[in-house]
Amino acid sequence: MQLQEFDFFGAEQGAGKRVAGVDEVGRGPLVGNVVAAAVILDPTRPIAGLADSKALSEKRRLALFSEICDKALAWCVASASPAEIDELNILHATMLAMQRAVAGLSVQPDFALIDGNRCPPLACPSEAVIKGDAKVPAISAASIIAKVVRDQEMADLHRLHPDYGFAQHKGYPTPAHLAALRRLGPLPEYRRSFRPVRALLQPGD
Image 1 (cartoon, rainbow, N blue to C red):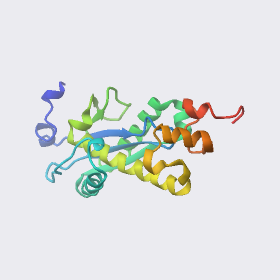
Image 2: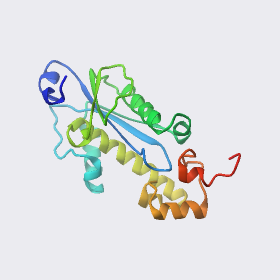
Image 3: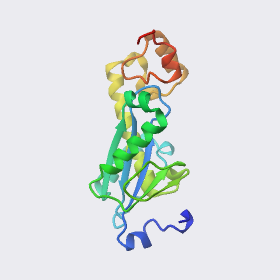
Image 4: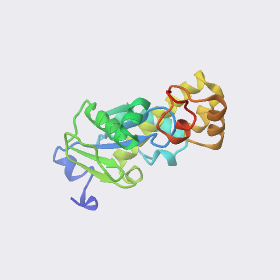
């Protein structure tokens, strides 16, 4: 099936097919979960302004988050923990989070469209869509849900450990974050297999 021939809200929905968009947030950070979301949009309740979550302001993301949660046929957020990332590696942990998100949908999809260049093993057929978060409304919706949830996780961690600056850098390895990490040391929420963290661990940690 060629992507350009796939009518996301036309023939497939008209034939009773439910299409889930799937995306993740948090592969690059040094700390916290990798978060995935799966969304099945309702073609009878369109949502204007869906786009790649990174291209939206925080205010717009939050507004769309509420609208997606209200109007979607089904949505689910799932994650893989830092321990799972360390055990499996970030790619396989991301696939696991996506699997969990799709499996957790209250309405099971007939087909899944996955942002990126590979698909996790799923119970339904799937296709990977490079830059899908900017092309496919359901993937855009999933990217918004995942980013809002992960950003909130970082805000919660910031309240517990404000000196690390998690609310600002969201766990990504910015110069300010790396400086704080070297000064304060890794927290249990850090991904111990990631090089900047691993370099600071003592033997036996």
